[in-house]
Image (tube, rainbow over all chains, first blue to last red; front, side):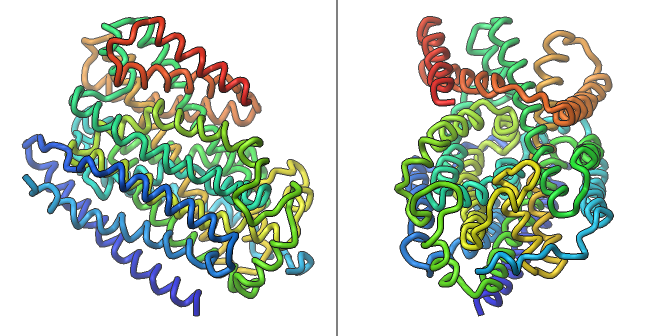
Length: 101
Length: 450
């Protein structure tokens, strides 16, 4: 059951990733034909420190909890698939972020 | 978990190993040739992608270049040696080091928007001091070569353990496979293939680990077996509070990793090539979403403990702990296709890092050497020199790996450079005394720990 779920999620994340990369490549080609310089400012808010702290704490917990109960050993592969999904998703939201003032 | 059940898969032949290595290189070469015709017009396109890399490619390529072949195997190896304390001390500083680049990358793009290399930045901040810039340029080149040779070493180890390929031949085939496609495409190829490699690292890692957990009867069986054993050191392998992990490698590694990102042109090339509005987010997300990769692969280290494997068994010649991951995957009884998938994880990590480093080397040579010392050099000549730099860097690295000449002072220079960068980024008024104090204190600290 666990392997099946991982496989299904893996396929879905891969599909999102590949679709994203194709979109990103098309966007790069379209931009290459323009001479317009992208002068936009960095859109990351100052609250990124909180994101950084949360990422570090979650990773520490993920590792530490593997020593507390066997259940937690099943969790990291879901996050690995999550990494692929996030990169795929990033291709789709970058235009939205670029339209922000 | 009975170690006598572990048998090498009979289908793992050297020929298959060469096919996998060359096949991945050939696939990347096709991408490189497409990129070359569609996205490369000038040297600026070649070394900096015309500063048009978006968020998706930014995050994907940063994760990939930071996931070294050694890192993939090291997370497994250190878990095997120190239990989850080893994984903790290896992983936590790793992602943090990338995220720590976020403020620096934003600062650089804001104050030096048209930059290309960290040496250029040092030149700017040190009032065009030739000595400072020259030292940093040399340190950058050494650092890049170190990056390439460490990955070549890791790849040769995997190919020799899994496919029985002679390690020296694996080094030569590996470096040739990467250099051929890097040569044709520049940074855009590096970014696109690296992003694709992130997919090849993340999802297969999850699937391989899930299959292995299934094969041994589930996490409960593993947890019970591990809780009664310790691989190499006395102590509980299921606690992060073991002192031997930070003392043995953790503290030194944490300092080294932070130095590696802050003083690495591979990262700064990306900082100047990603669209300004996405720079901060790219580094932040890359660091955060890098974490699951080594954590997932670290589980294989627990499997090594659970089976009670010894270094003599996993690597009879070198007794290297990083061989535990390849050993388990090739011996536990996975179908051949999944073993190849694991090899592709390592090769993807290796190729993308070497490719990224080669691309960084081309930018250093073009900007910090050719443009600085021969400003009248034609665009065509600059382009040729940028490409030749990649080839020469790869060949030198391969020769060093083949001869075994790896010098520890290289990492020392990187740490010194880190202190220098910190001081000059945020305290521009810091005088030479403070800078040198920082440099030497950092050096002494590192030597003491090493």
